[in-house]
Amino acid sequence: MSKRILIRRLAIPAAIIAGISIVFLLATIPIYNAQYENHKEEFRKYINSFMDQNTKYLKGIASRIKTAQPDPVLINELQSEYMIEHQKADEPKKYLWMTSMTGDFLFGVPSSDFQKINDAFDKYRDRIKADEFYRDRNDFLTKLVDKADRVDFSQFERAERPDRWYEENSWRFYKGDANESLLQPATTSFSTPVYDNSGKLTGRLFMKVDDRVNEKKYYNEWRFERSDLGDALRVVPTVFLVISGIFLWFLLPTWVYVDAKERDVKTPGVWAFLSLISLFFGLTIYLITRPNTLKLFTCPECKGELNGTRAYCPHCGYDLSNNFCQQCQYPIKPEWQYCPDCRADLKKKEKRHYENNSEEMAGLNNNQQPEEIRE
Image 1 (cartoon, rainbow, N blue to C red):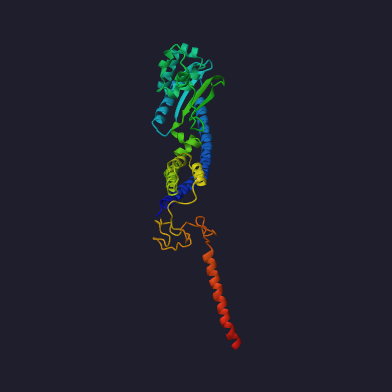
Image 2 (image 1 turned 90 degrees about the vertical axis):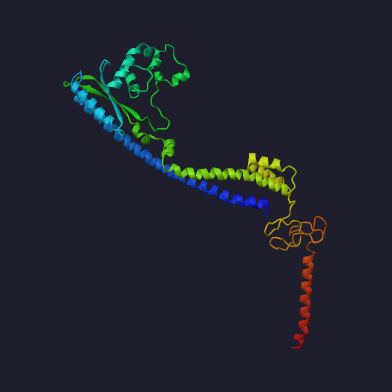
């Protein structure tokens, strides 16, 4: 079997696998688009319910505060509720605090986190004020209370302002919970006014909800596709596509090299390298410029190498008399009238055969005429 034929036969299944993989990957696009639209609709319903539930919860607590100084019993109840909710791994974490109309901090739940944040603000007040990044104590609490266990407050001990890289990655210049992989931040802040028994405004109640336990609900399209279980189904065709693509990539210059050798091209390696680095561009140029005839002749029927024979194919027994000039044995094409090597009339045999058939028919007619006359 010719090497070129072998390479083509190897390329066929690889091309089929690559084609099937591409079709499968393209077919998943509308499926994932529909899934993501459902995801966004579910998120919209979830976030509406989330906002309503927490707003009602915060207003319910505000309605229980009837004096300028909150009742210690109520604070202890809220602290107990937090401890119970905190033990549930699947529940969002809630940070609750209240400030007076003058901005003074009154209480916070959980008390340990608020104590740490307030102490840091009091200790580094001058540095924080000089940085002009946090507006006041309440802004400081809002941005950092859910990160109290991760903030390195020693940064505020440095008198100089940090450089740009440090500034962008420092809690000292905190920039919020923006996450490019989410539809919106997974932490949300709420606030509501607090009135006493006489209806006088006494302060504001704040709450920050850390909903990162449900972060999957906030995923944007990019993150959703890479977290969905269906993504595993795309890995298999992608792997097959990559493997088959690499196989075809290296098979192409191999075919060019073998074909160039069989056509006695002087620089087959150069053409193979050009095909490797430029793929179909190099192949196109090679197909245009390559010689038309092969150095090694092959059977037009089975494509087997003839090894010099001009009569019958040694592989399948195919009659080669019409593929080589009977006078000089030059390879010819069926549509040629004359041999380009010896100028022999290639149609002479057919003409002779036609004339012989005509003579036989004429003789047959002459023999039949007397019989018809006798009749």
